[in-house]
Length: 109
Image 1: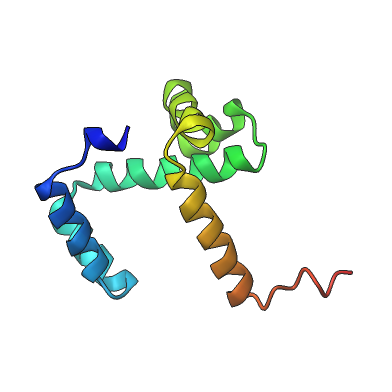
Image 2: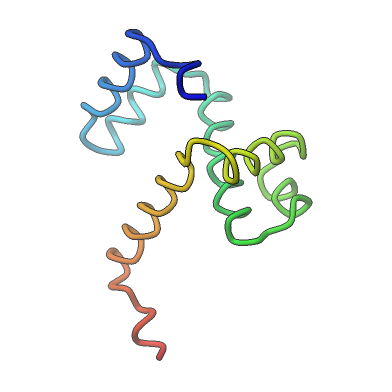
């Protein structure tokens, strides 16, 4: 699957993204390289992946994100059978959130 997108131009794009140092720089870069709709669509797909992983049903994901059930189904397939990109990112975001919140899960015990 990954082979479909591999290439020198995509490598250059990914290197450009890895050179960004903070959220403000990402906003500037994505404002120039993508349309507002493209950025919104990507963010909705990531939110859908997060919600699906948490067990949220398609209808609620659709209602909260505005995504079609076809797109949600694609995100779900990627979570189950894809390259594990969503899982990688969501796991890292979970760890980041826990560290930012001081992992309050231990306090509840």
